[in-house]
Length: 287
Image (tube, rainbow, N blue to C red; front, side, top):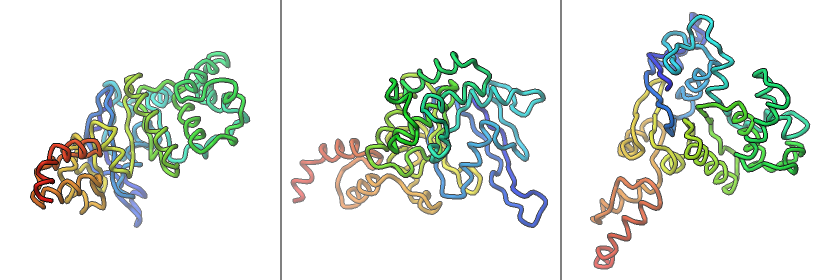
């Protein structure tokens, strides 16, 4: 479990350019949870996730992983980064080796594993991401498609065998097919490997479809924290924060305002369809 206690981060502290990116953030992330982290650009969400694996150090506050402060003396940051894996936005820009296999091996080797052990981990990670076999292992990462490059980059993080996987806008720039492949991969990792997943996304449809909990960040503070249905009930407040709800939320509210008995808590297309089908007799009478 990750516990965040009153976390504050200030850029350019003590200068005329001082800016507070995080303001007293406190929350808990239990093992195995699938969390969506949303917020407008500049809200502090990227700053927050970079604290979780030690890339940034808090100005004040604390982060505990499995009960131990990552700021305690002699804390093993290398172990932290193998426990909490972070996939940056456009991670394929960080591919650099001559083959996909060598690229995925880089992380485990950096942890001190032997070539054989690193190769074993890399092959397991490539299998998880659908890139197994010599066809992919020996290919140049730069010859892969956009979606395959993204999966290869994710495999590089998975090869370090993290317990927590954080992904910053993992579908950015992908076509619809590549986007669906990546999201399905992330869901499978969560369900099959029981991994804790934190998904940073601007797509309300994606978080509504996949996550079980949403944390909304605004001006460095947590504004909402709950299930997707609980959070999207506040769709008007989200709009004031520069966000929105899934499109079906607006459709269902418009139908309810027009007098139809539909579920205004529906947040996915499937839920909206089922609710509308139940109301079909009422629709027919109206027509």
